[in-house]
Amino acid sequence: MTVLRIWVIACNVFLEVIRDRVLYLVALYALVMGAAMLLLPEVAAGAHDKITLDLGLAGIHVLGLLVAIFVGTGLINKEIEKRTVLVLIAKPVSRGEFILGKHLGLAAVLVVLLGLLLVLYLGVLSLSAISYSFTSLLLAVVFTFLEMALLTAVAMLFGVFTSSLLATLMTFAVYLMGHLSTDILALGEISENPTIQRVTSGLYLVLPDLERLNLRNQAVYGLDLLPTTGELLGNLLYGLLYIALLLTLTSAIFARRQF
Image 1 (spheres, helix red, strand yellow):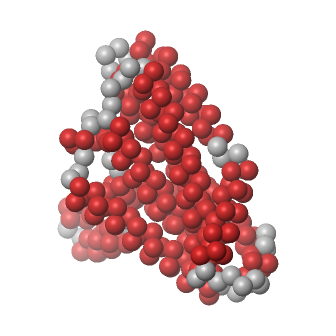
Image 2 (image 1 turned 135 degrees about the horizontal axis):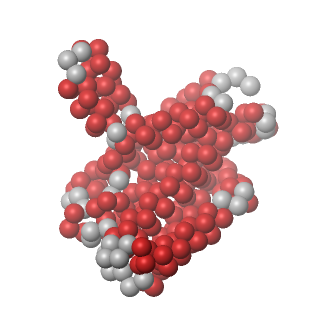
């Protein structure tokens, strides 16, 4: 692989997504948080601090999820449907470079988006005189980014061999099941049916455990409830390895496609 070619593809994806007005989501977030700052003290006396903290992190998560799924599924699928992929693969660009460049480009968009949302979030907390732990909130957003990068890789994988609609639905299903993977395994253990137990165990092994990347609930209470440094590093490595595996699988499938 050539870093320069990957960089060019990533920059093109970044500029294309930014031109699609994805950063309008920042304005939407600002409106929601501004309304919360004004209304919550009136309707949730005594609990508005906790609600504002939860709402801000949930908003960052939801908006990042929308970009990861809806933009991620179209990164490859749109090129295939419009046949512009024929122009790209005719150039001296390997399919692995193409996949990696696309993923890095959208990951850069997510960094910018989540960074801007975090700045707005901290601004609202400061204006509302709500106490918070900057380190814990930053860690929660960093792991939210890692989760969105993983889901982008999932969306690209499905987008290589399915339609945009089906890829979107399948990615959303992986998101839901990834957050419920431990519950799915527990359900299989409760069941006395060996077939159900094998199915649930298989799903647990294949699906990413997205709850390992979810620090939002703990982060609002500060550093005390967050996992240890060793656990955080282990979860970080888990997410990165899963992304690498998904991108490798996507490249292998894309390389076998005939256009």
